[in-house]
Image (cartoon, rainbow, N blue to C red; front, side, top):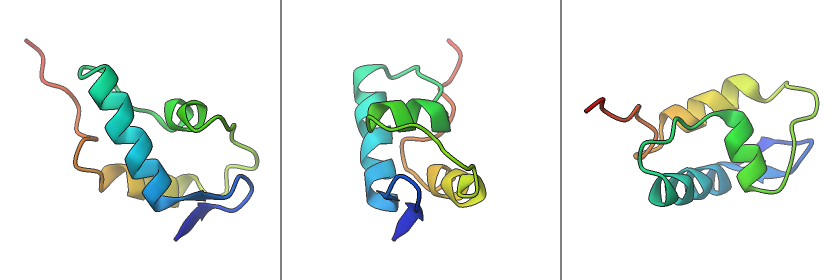
Length: 68
């Protein structure tokens, strides 16, 4: 499903980017901006933000890292 129509970003691309970001840096706090940059894109109108955040929240690797 397309989440961001302006940049043609799908939910599967978001999930894959989160997995890659967390694999590289396990303690990283994942934000929409970091996902856009990981995909080589930038946000445009922001209309997708609610769906983008819902998609992020559904990612297995999205949870906030534990403090040690």
